[in-house]
Length: 66
Image 1 (tube, rainbow, N blue to C red):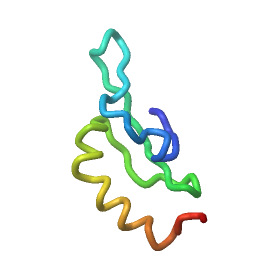
Image 2: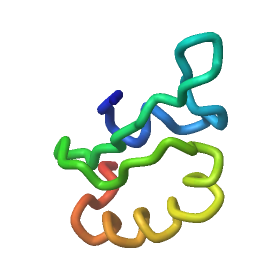
Image 3: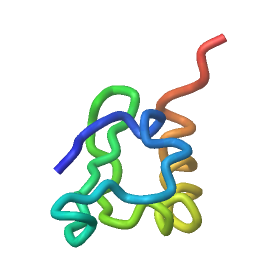
Image 4: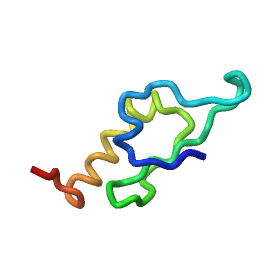
């Protein structure tokens, strides 16, 4: 499993793999406070569907820094 802040995965559409692309690596997307927010083996689906919900959950807790 790879654990990293969600922003580090932003823009990556294809999930990292090993064994010549046969095994997808599980990705743990962390909040800015390094707390697990989502775990997925399909980054493309995550960005299309689940990101919107995760973003809403984090919006109140982690306001943008200006």
